[in-house]
Image (cartoon, rainbow, N blue to C red; front, top):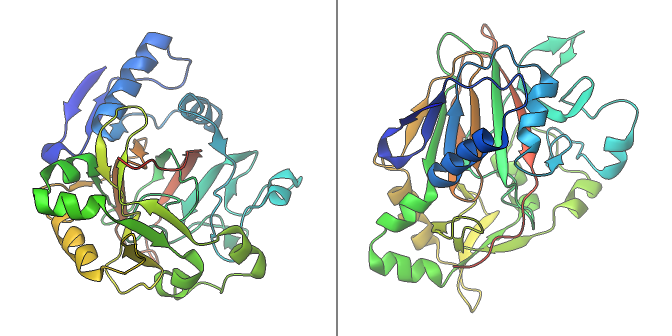
Length: 305
């Protein structure tokens, strides 16, 4: 395995691996150690890996959430969906663990969710137990666009001025998926009553401690480029500090922390959803095709640092 360290302390690229077979425990531990240290890792050259091998590799990081336990269009993947004979919407046939992000159509119907993650976020941030890891495997790439930005939020926290660190440690983040839905996804159908019941409002510490690395990290969940009432920083008295949210957003989204990844077919991106954030970019989805296969690993409730 050859390790290429990315600029801005944003992650690492791993070359020379073959995930089509079972890795030894020592080799997997080497990969896992880089993941813990760098928050975002890209594993190149995996175009030949089939869905079964991909899922088997991802499962070594933890329990897989079948489908994606968040809204894709208007149907949330509840337990009843996963147990149906027919796989949930937007998942790979015969592999409900793999959620498809694609503008491709199959028999006149969408084969995947065509537009996803076009804002800075950590996956499932609005749940009581956010995702631990998100894996994305590139199957089809457009000629231009469709890139993915990412950053390491441990590095962001470390670089904060001491006064901002002190203020951030006093704050919690309140997420209301139902309130923010129409702002984040104005072109999608409204949430159903079932979906609203499955995504109650939650609060997380703004500054968290990573359960494995022990590093302190900034965990806003999402940094929207538009006004969204579904997210608020609140102090111990429940007062909203919109000014701090804007300050942190401006600080975190400076070029000093961000890497832009241009996909090649067969790239696998693994993002630690506590200590990393990512953001998709748009592309010509009328004339170009893009397909990513996502696997999500179950996480735990964030702990305050």
